Amino acid sequence: MIKDLFLGYKIHEQNLEIYGFHKKENRYEMTKAVLAGDFLLSIAIQDGGVAVEILDAETKESYAPFWVSHLTGSYIGHVREEVMNILLEIRAACFQQENFLYPQTQRMLEQIAIHYQGQLEYLWERLGAQTAYPTGAFRHQESKKWYGVLMTIDWAKLDPQKEGKIELLTLKHDAVPVLLKKEGYYPAYHMNKKYWISVPLNDRLSDQEVWKLMEKSYTLTR
Image (cartoon, rainbow, N blue to C red):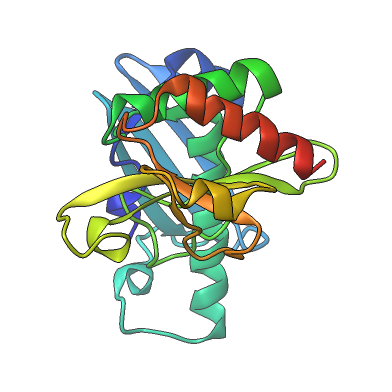
């Protein structure tokens, strides 16, 4: 839900005013129209927290049905979808994820941003499906083809002998059978196992090894 949407994200204050927030004392505020102006989305950011309120545009009263999860239907569904899209846009423009489980994950994202101007895109998020560790893809800027997928999964889905969670980078490669004979490489998770490979970002493979895989995937998917 919305309360989890910004978990593990750090605010970039310099981006808030660029996006359109107005600073009032020690907080940033913004109001946006929703559903052709039928509702107002009020967003307040203060001390690292994000407060969201949905108002009826005519009465200026809180639209309580928005928060009642068992209330469904096309109308309220459209309201929730538009609100979520606005919040995801704000998160992408004004926040940076910092809750990665392993330092190698952050290092790889920094390298991708430097070399390919790539950012992790959260393509599958919808209301009710957000987590503190969402799944995202890296895409070529022009073709929009994927060259990498980052996700957090249970270790046991890769190795029944392991527990806890692991951050996994899935990349395209032209020598998958050869790589799978080595330690630290796994069959692609939720991708075509013939052409893709998954590697945990827990420093089992060096940054140089992972980056070499990234370069190969970037080239193969152009």
